[in-house]
Image 1: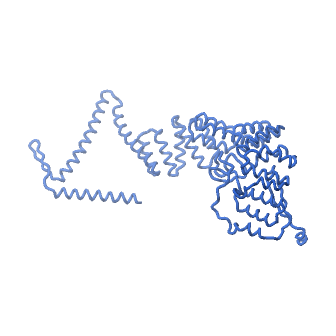
Image 2 (image 1 turned 135 degrees about the vertical axis):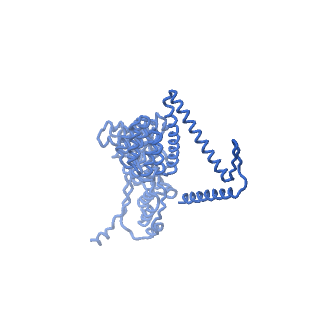
Length: 492
């Protein structure tokens, strides 16, 4: 709207300027005096300007006629393409002008203008390799997907533009949600141009979504050969794919292949927690506890995680709490200041009913870096040491308002997952899940939740016996309140 108004104002201004100039020339004195062959011509100022314009036009026409005459003479002398070249030059000039205008319109978001210029360029140039791409993109911009797909198919027919056509149709299928067809087209496009980074990324994502882990590993290797991935990134992602392949083999009960794939995934990336857990389980199934211990220790050194502790407990599931504390020293002496190590050692001492040692193991974690798990452990320690119900309930109430602790979170969209997956359930990103604390929510907690520990802590009415259940294998600490016998009688 504003641009149209500006054009109208400029047009009116030009007309006004020309009218003013014509009036000025009519009122001006003097003019030209032309004498030739005994004739004399004395036009006024306005007529002189008009004659000058006519002279320029006549010279331009004369030059065109002369060029045409030269072309005719060349044709007469045997140059059969002289006339066609003369007219082709004019057509090409008009065609390339239309093509450039169409590209500018496409870049500025004017889809209809781009389509018009593209059709004009196609009419003059007769070079579909140049104009079809512009037509297809202009059709997509205007929402004419059918026209765009037809034009992309024309590009597929030409060997020089086949990749562009296949990629264009692939993007259309992705936009329409037809991932099956898009996967087939991505494979063809990647075969035509393996060094095209974007196509490789699309193919890898589609293969991972379809759980074609072997195909995805081949694509990943090709990207490494083409220099599109750093070697360390390739190693990590290859481990993720190997782990995913091993997970599928577990469901298929392919025991031998499962073990090999799990161990390979751990070898490729020892810090990948799910791979370490699966490799350890594979060694346990083979009755190789030393290998399982070595795998889990290395992973714990890089990234302590509850799943690693659970897998370490599974090496000897029937041992006594005292024996378990001794065996777990292999883990707890590594990364001793890590919160996960402190909480693991606390759980082990709670299971052994050594509550003073559990308190010492937990240290000042609930004061400096509290989360729901550490605060719940503190409630278990207080109950084990004989604290009142109000104190225990106060700690449990505090667990509501503190952060929940590390979880599997997508680095791309911040979606939280209960379990590790190679692909984010929310945004379909590949290898973006990390074990970390979620960002603090901007949503306000319910009013009064900060006072809850004080409110429940002030209550002196006993609620019955509190039972503490701790199992390092399942990585869980549960504090339960059972009703008093008097309450049971009253209920009856």
